[in-house]
Length: 307
Image (tube, rainbow, N blue to C red; front, side, top):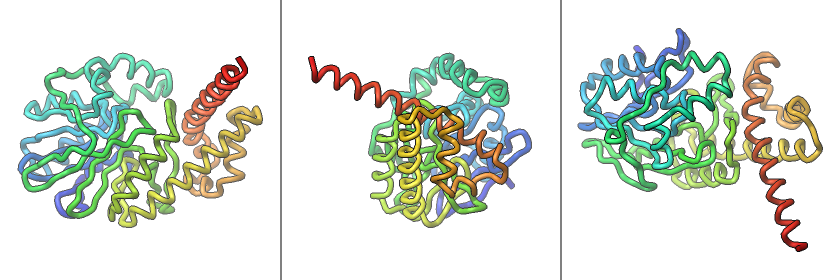
């Protein structure tokens, strides 16, 4: 079985990724018009489809996307091919990339290198099959409802889904990466990342007082507010440490060592140091790029003030 009921109408689908599970959580909210959230890349769509079969779902109303990074939405076209009755439900800022994913795919290929090929084929969608979301919009699934919460930061087009009856929040990557082994949550901050907006999004989610939090990477937890608050503090630490390292002129390795020194929880994420570093470096890069932009803006304002 790939599916697991979380509570009420909300289910987790653990689609295999080249034989491995616990990689990306796809979520299904059942109703007369159900939604599947984050089908993953094309290579994981067969697992998502199998999950729908296990749940007895023959017709979909929506393929919801928390954001369009390829590990979440790269297979949206394949899901619509299998369920042409459904619409893709995404943030308005994502639409142009869903219709023409060439820039998104090129950027991902440059960033991930050979690992990009594992995602599988990426194709554009017919714009008539895309429904743009609105912040605060209510989706009536005929037997269940979801409220859409825009949560930028990790991505400018990020959104989360709030199930009010059971107080369940379904995230993309705006709440970090959840380690079931340690119970801790670790930053996901690849470029382009905006920490100010990310922290505002976390405040918005905390204000909902959710009870269950559903992570894309990976799984769910019953102490949602505690997890979100913890992650907010962890993210603030990373932002502070990385900014300090950039201003001191440290390179990526130097910032990595500084993070290990000042964030002991980092040592709990992965058993070996090489693995921790491989996981952390792309996220450090996102914060480094933001800090460099911030410094550039500060310098521009200083120059403007003395003119």
